[in-house]
Image 1: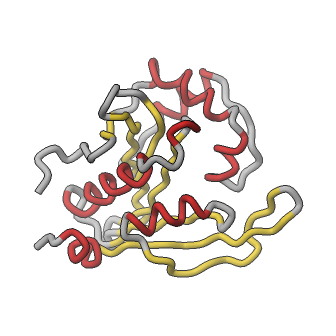
Image 2: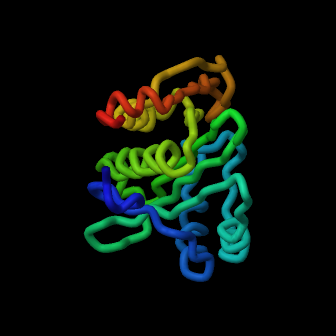
Length: 184
């Protein structure tokens, strides 16, 4: 068992600090490709004030973290769990790596491995689910590396640049995670 629940091989999960992190996350919101890979809402830029308000919003059913590199403690993204149903032990996860130069280097996979471990060991969840657009194969590969399986899709759910794309739904069960990680 990992002695530091929030640390992986490449990154660590940290608390939001709206006063410090808002300017960086507002900059990410101005990267339309970043926004469009993770959300089907129209892309729109956030002000630092809006980002600060969003970062400061938490609730009993949200567990949000910033993603920081281990090498230089640089803020590169965010990840969060949203509990769908405490009684059934289910949550949805969302992740974004905002720093483009960090895309495709394993940081997102490492962060996802940490947050899934947190979901199953600390929150005692049974299932973690996510949705991803079919036009983001890099993310799909990353989620599969973290143990997620494709479970379904909604055909033509998202429209980007005049083309329709499917939404892919993926999930991981605690029993699958235990088997993958040789956990008891």
